[in-house]
Length: 332
Ligand SMILES: [Zn+2]
Image 1: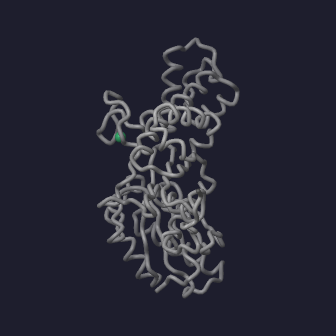
Image 2: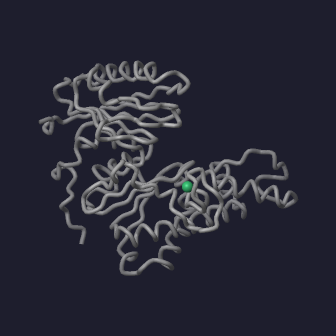
């Protein structure tokens, strides 16, 4: 019914920022606004500011409301996409927020909800590097690791919208304990946090080693600082990325064997250091994967990253339009 409406609003609710955008069905962002989340305030207050933001987007863009297909929300945490409820978002301290009903009542528009990794996957699939592919996987490597999986032209959600927890598959049976309760998760080896921890631990173990990080080991190491060090040719930093790439490669090989994708798109802050990580990922996949499956997989880096959440939210309204997504194109 709303399928012919050429615009949608994408809303990306994160622990630090909330970003809203009005987006044309071509993927063009007409207006975009970001506000601080202030997660310490209650959900009702945060939502009041979100309503104002949407009003402002509509006013600035001058798009009539009857040309808007709906509002698509991307958020971290546990969601129920059938009831449009944010069940639990620990970065916001939100529980059972009926975001679909609240936004629906306020704007009289259809509302859709997805998690942030799936939103980024949808954005890639509808408008980005996954366009025209029926089988693609988007992986975000940031402080944590997650994935969104499109298989045979459908987003795999699982029964509770929780599929794609790629960061929490085991790659080392006796590995370190993870926050999820499992051991040896991909996230413990290849996330930004893991990369920084590895370097920090090595600095502690070898306090007199001469490195980019100097002898001052009190300095808090982040994956961004590790990237700067790698740029200077620092061996610790280069090895940290290489190791992360190796473990990511093992995890990705598992995904390739399971889903037989055509393309894997990597995004998230850590992938800004792609020049240091990607070769190790590719090498590991080549070494370990089933060659019939691995040789046709294309690895690429997301070009949408910052806007993945809002684009994916809006993309929920345009996923089923083959004329826009060109999913029937044969890439041979
Ligand atoms: Zn885990």
